[in-house]
Length: 378
Image (cartoon, rainbow, N blue to C red; front, side):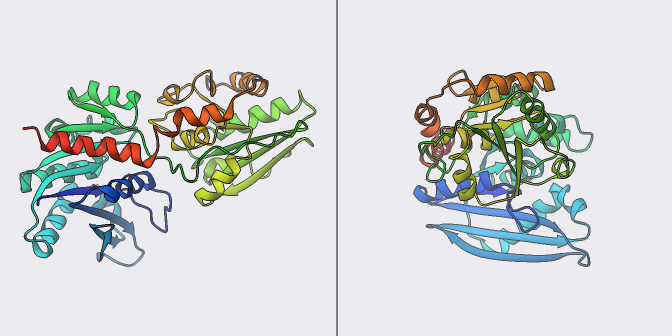
């Protein structure tokens, strides 16, 4: 039987423990019920002393094959942005170690560099190719002097492009003219992120936010909005800030009003994030662009209403029954906080309305249908 190769360059590492987790969650869900999968993860990481050191780990994922290739180099950036180098490396490795491998389909995750490498491998193996796109900057790559032409070719030659939102799908379709755009959201671990009845305390309001705190995120709107609102209420305001980043450093030592407490939690396990969300009254998410937003979907899955920026794909997740969308001005965020704390939301209904859509089983079935449709059509 021919195999399906799933290719990823966005993978968790010691340096970036959360990178590409959503890709790995999808692969895990697919491999539970689908056979003939080879999951090849490629990591190109910095080294202070090595020009080129390659580590390969072979394993299994349920009944499927897992291959992890890691390259360490002080020239890692130059290697990472050279998809032709990676193509030659992977082609040689697969020919040497899996000479009898027959690939009917290659599934690449993100156009650069993975989608270009997948396109070159698909041409070499004469296999079909699909691309899952998550990247907000994918459209800009098509204008690049070096990579634009081959990126556009990779898109156009693919049998399908899977996008995590209509917002991203419309951008990619407009830029490429591709006719087979399929929307499949990221997975939410519904075993962790599910509704547990909230215990409210009239004397306090509990807020939470979660991100890698750098652009395009806007921690300034969240904190400054809360600080301004604090002067209007006698209630105690508690903000849990999950994640790290340069924006967090700017607020670590600010003076807080007596009725405001900020818990700087850094990166914490997902189980702990789920526990905090179930104790949160309102989730806050400020950003200049979003192609999906896993953290918003996770909050909604716990039944937590969301106040978020009216940007990107966020209007696809948030409506009057589960939150409020605001523009990215301080005045709009203060007004949004005033409004959302006055609304009595049905937390169970919020959770139920998104639960099945983002479950591992639902997402895996949607991707498997794409595989079957592509493989069964010319």
